[in-house]
Length: 330
Ligand code: A3P
Image (cartoon, rainbow, N blue to C red; front, side, top):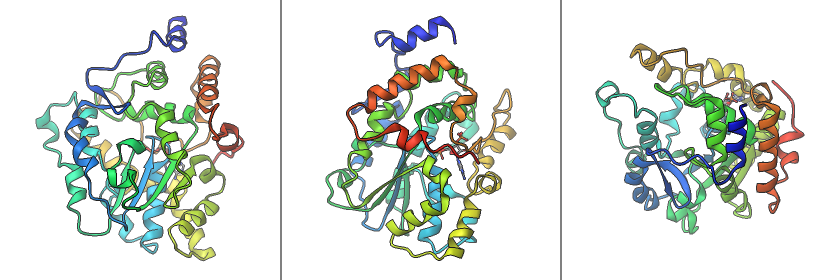
């Protein structure tokens, strides 16, 4: 890492400023396009039998979505062949994809349906994914007038940051280097940041009986126990054989191959449209705990450790307990 980048990381005065395509909403960075969805999300009619999956981008939301959907749908592996994005839609998908594809002319990708309205009009039982912090959720959830089950996932921010950078590269025209993305992540100038405000907005509400917080690291360490924990929260009983079957379905290698969850169809579509200059990599990238060690320099790790210590100081989120002492690789 260059000295200049180090200084930038350390200096609060020198924070990366928001790109013109991003804005601040209630203290959180989101694409400009999000302003057209903010009110509809706030007023969104929540249903008691919805299941909400929340989590900062790259914390393992897709993995947990697949688990939750299968548990709630009586392990319907045949039904799970349908793309996860249809089974478990992403609430703010439209403004995010518009932002991600901002360098691609509209006529290349065509019009993108309004994801918030589609979910609002959905007649069947809803499974809803969002990366939004608590403060940007529908008011009915925030004020507790409707209490759907909410499952939230968290992950070591060092791994999240690296994964977020690689995720960006899946979108045509992405030019940020890893250094720039680390800087943006720490300066709160990436969509859904500030990271700590976002995850603590859920972490501090664990007394809510309709909220369960999971960690990526625990899922890696003991997937069967995680399956049982989620099933228990959802009021479902799974026998040993069913847990073992689901564990197999959810293992990284199987999810990596599974076209219904691996986002490969989207990547192939971009490839076919010749939108990439170089190979973008894949969504199911490494799937391990501690992958940041392969890519972040010791200097950056030190800076991030300080940032983590500062931000967890007055919380009961014991970083080592949740993210570090769980080191099993796949
Ligand atoms: P990496 O980029 O570190 O590999 P999200 O779904 O929230 O976008 O998170 C994506 C991250 O979860 C990626 O992390 C991806 O590889 C990882 N992931 C997805 N499915 C997984 C699985 N079955 N086991 C382990 N990690 C998984």
